Length: 110
Length: 118
Image (cartoon, rainbow over all chains, first blue to last red; front, side, top):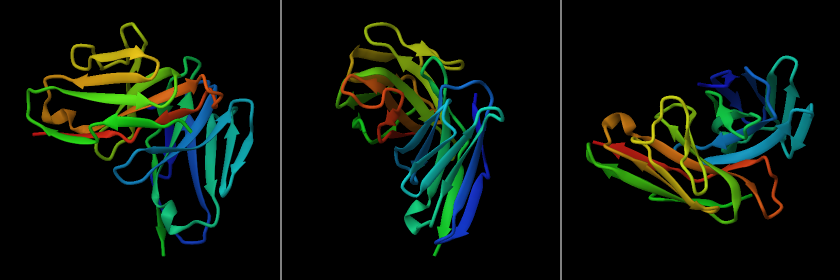
């Protein structure tokens, strides 16, 4: 069963704008990971945030984690056409398994 | 990041046949997993591949249908047995934790195997 739920399910924005995707999960976690998947291809690991962290940055990516609300957000700043992809959050449990959310399909308009 | 390769990258198979997918990691990992991604869907965990012992399957997946081997710390196989069109999916393996100093809790994925069953 799905651990995480992303919203929105789909998002279209103009190039240069910021994109924000949210993820909620159900049980306690050790970490939360975000992945990108281009159409029909493998998953690229973007960033991992641990349960004792609140915010993390990597280049144009900013991830926040609120364990009290069991939610996380991924912000992509200054979006580019190459950011068009599906984005998944994955909640890491104590037994080292990660359970994926349904994903957000992001489309960057030229 | 860990480099994970899978073979084959894609295949088209007939109903009732079986396909074995190979997963190779470039360094020793503590854990390996197999996932399925049905068209337009997210990833669903099939099982944890345990080195030298039987895999641990998630609810809804059984060993007779998806036998898994992991003879060492860098290699695993998943077999999709007695296939039907409903098995058409992308199958991905992943590795977690390494002995080479990489982030222990980051899970890296292979490129996936796209399976079509006719």
